Amino acid sequence: MINPLLEPIHGVSLQDYAAISAKMASGIDVKEICKTLGIEQAVYEEASAIWVTRMQEDTTWEVTTLFGQYFGEADQHPKLSGLQVAMSEDGKANLDKIKSDRYFYEELCGARQAAYNYGFDGAQWIQDNFGITLGDFQGVAMKWSTEQKAEMDRGFYDNVHHFLAHQEAKQKEYEAKFAEEQGGNVADDVEY
Amino acid sequence: MGFFSRKSNNNNQLAEAKKEMEETKVRFFSFIEKLEQKVEEFSASSLPELTEMNQTDTDEYKRSYQRLKAAVIGQLDNMQQKALEVKNEKIKNFELADDSHELNDLYYDFRNECYERYNKLEELIDQSKEQINDTHSENYETKYQSILDEFEATKNNFHCSQCSSPIELTKIFFTITYITCPSCQTKNTFEPSTQAKQLEHIGRSLAEQRTKHLLKEFEAMPEKAHELYLQIHDLELDLINEKNKTVIEKTNNKIKKLEKEKQFLEEQQPIKYQQYLRAMFDEWNKINPALTEEHERFYNRLLTDYNNN
Amino acid sequence: MEEQKKPLSLIEKMKQRAQQQKNYGGEYIEEAAKVNTRTCPNCGAGRAENDGLTHCAYCSFEFLSVELSDGINIKKTDNSKNN
Image 1 (cartoon, each protein chain N blue to C red):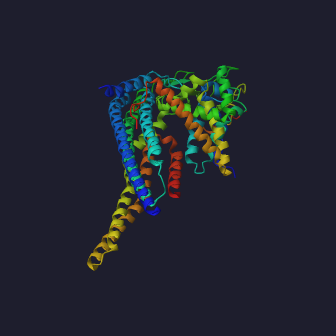
Image 2 (image 1 turned 90 degrees about the horizontal axis):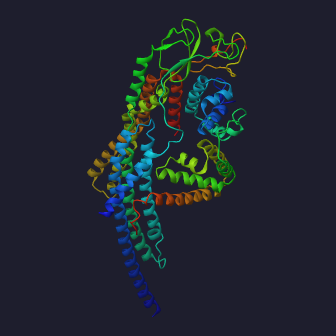
Image 3 (image 1 turned 180 degrees about the vertical axis):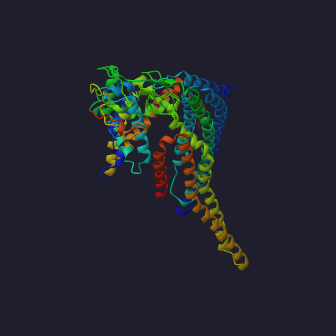
């Protein structure tokens, strides 16, 4: 029995909606996305409004979970995978690296959190320093999150702790750099 | 001979340990106090800046204000982390010379005092964070009124792109939509203004704002129930060594009365929550009636979630 | 006195940084409502109510490559019949 909440809206499936969201988060214009999908913006806006209500009414969390999964798989969408925003060579290399190197991915998660803690727009900071868009970053985050959940379902928790510790350590490193840039933290002169 | 020298050695060790703990405690308390001063100074200087930025940030999402707030809270977290690290290093991991009963007793007293002192710092930081978060205010009534005013002012301004006949808007659209020209039957594409497109989103925030008092009443209930529980517990403790029959009866009556109050409060909780939800959704439906059916399903979902927990 | 200055100037620095930053996704631009129509790029015909939104009534050009369902204002009846 397929969950009726997964029915497409005006032919826009959940997979479509998630991929559209990912591409928009990567900076691609909604008009170009609609053109590629063969729809008009009116159709997209209604579908988008209603997909949100589907997630709100779903007691099973299935719609939200699948949305996340499809968001992470936007590059496999049959029609939208071809829409790519221009990236620098470094950006492309860094994006490939966070996909394959979990340590580097967790480092950037820590760096992004450190940026927020020092008053930066974290998404913009990642884009400026590593050339990766928010949409791409979140897509990769979904994949690692799915993999981690699968491990936890099998009762394997070692990686969770290991990578959390790595992320926290990296966050501290970047925070120290940001602190230096701003002339120190408030309580630098307070020692035990 | 050996026993007595061992005993006096232990006494020496105990005295030394006591001295060391006392010194550590004094030093730790002084460190925490200095941090508390920093927290107070820094919060005092941040609050007016945050209040001002919340009011003057012209961005729709007040992103400059959000960034400043994140940076301020980041500094408070930084200070708490500093205190926590010292607490762990100097207090939690305080080295004991041996595992004797007396030494452990000394240690636990010392540790509890230091932990309580640390907790005061944590409370202060939590209070500061609350004040900092309270600098955020958004007037959703004004935003909603702006949408209503714009609609009234512009609803008769539109014309069919094909034949120029007037197209009158009969309701506030929040998504791009197709409107049929009453004269030539052409399907025109109508794109609402940026602010009108926010109707559903503003609708929810405004509905929550208008019914916040009901939510607060509901949220205050568990603590009230807990207070009653504590009162009952105290009375029960009083009964343990009580011999006087009159006093026992009086106390038992008090306990019964409090238990009834507590039970009533607990029965009222789900009712109060449903009242809040119903009121909130009724407001939301008034603001954006186009999604009433969807809102109702969301309302039912939230009630189901609550009842299942 | 020195210790008093530090928190103040730090807040000033934070304030400046918060205000000067670029917002991810760009600035929020307020736009007014507008009306236009889409005409068939093949034969120039407009879309009339009775002909539906998905295909051109005259040359069958595909405006929308999806099947419309019952949404908020757009309905199933807006599907063109002659596809």
